[in-house]
Amino acid sequence: MRKYIGKADVLIEALPYIKAFQGKKIVIKFGGSIMTNDAMMDKVLMDIVFMKYVGWRPVIVHGGGPAITEAMKRRGTRAEFINGLRVTDRETMDIVEDILAHKINSQIVNRLNTMDGDAVGLYGMNDGLIRVDKMMPEVDGKKVDIGYVGSVRYINAPLLNALLDQGKIPVIAPIGIGDNDLTYNVNGDVVAGDIASSIGARKLVYLTDIAGILRKPDDENSIISTLTRAEAERLIAEGVINGGMIPKVTSCLAALKFGVNKGHIVDGRIDHSLLLEIFTRKGIGTEILKDGSEIV
Image (cartoon, rainbow, N blue to C red; front, side):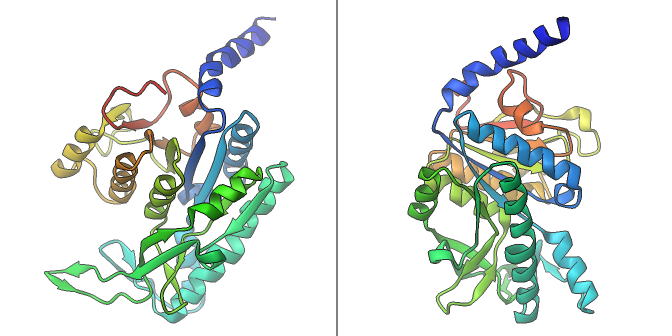
């Protein structure tokens, strides 16, 4: 009997969060090891379907970098990165599009639909969902051409909002379309932040392969549970937030400036990490706040 009472207590603890987010939008970005572990993926997707049926309106943005690199190896092409961005010639872009838009995106949509998620797959070509400009990063003070890599100019928010109004779960591959009607590779973390801002999402969540933002990079017990925007900016300047965490946090900070209420960096390797972070008082990852006054 005590076991069942404990389950009821969990539901009661979640009730304020369920009430607070009725009809609210949440953008969830994942990639990394989640993409290569079927059991882990299914638990993440079940969390998202649960969110939908308790009143959330979820949008998914997914990555797939390791799968792209593996496909390039099979074709005898070596992956090259500049400033963390994949150098993307037309042949590489064809691989990116095939892996992200056709294989991974379809797999996620199919799995969600077997869970009654009612998902729909999208990428930049769908009604100009993600319009981009060609990106030219600076290296040693000079702009470098890294091919078909884009920076987001426009998100077709009316398309996404219409799908959400129909009860769909949009599943988005981070591929943009340029003025030349060619496809471009886009950083998925940035796409997630721009989508969250454009559709007026309440929350932006990044599922990662680490516990959250760590004060000491090699110590997962040094997780920082809560940060304000100003504190996060200071940790970037001090180098505490570095590497692959930078695009997540900077995109999150930009989204907070444009109306998103909270950002979350969560360990996607933990079973049901989304539910533990969002529907419990303590949470398990790092939350980033606009000014520290947010309650939910």
